[in-house]
Image 1 (tube, rainbow, N blue to C red):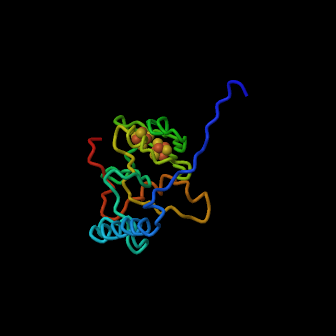
Image 2 (image 1 turned 120 degrees about the horizontal axis):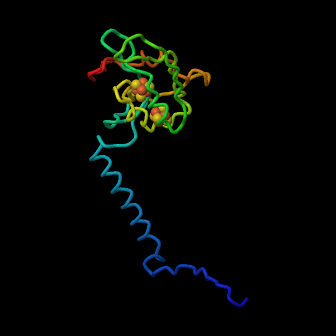
Image 3 (image 1 turned 45 degrees about the horizontal axis):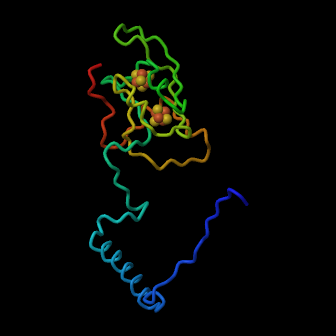
Length: 174
Ligand code: SF4
Ligand code: SF4
């Protein structure tokens, strides 16, 4: 056909060494043994762990379930400014504000929910928050439940979702 472009698939030719078969078997086994020995030497760096008895170590900054930080008087730090909800690309944060009668903060969330199923764990909500009111440092990643509704975290759940050993209070100024 004029103008058509054809490529011819050629069968690769094997060298005499490869045709002998046994040397290639030996080469393959050498590679396998090399990986085995390397893994044994660096046994502490193995990727496979005995989960769930053994918990994975997460790098610093790993983004897990959210939590809402508290003030020293155990009220929520969030001022319902909506910046996190605006930044969220998955549109999974819902906030309804109410007045607090305090001129310093003016508002607080009456409703604050995060749909953890829709969340893509990008961390933009944490970045957007001007008062360190929301964090994703819980290390909680084992998300399982019997219904989808259990993944919609309300304000109570978020205010108490603090892992053992991590303070629920922020050191931010206000
Ligand atoms: S981590 Fe990302 S997707 Fe999840 S709630 Fe925050 S901004 Fe939205
Ligand atoms: S969590 Fe932070 S960014 Fe989101 S509404 Fe509250 S104060 Fe604003």
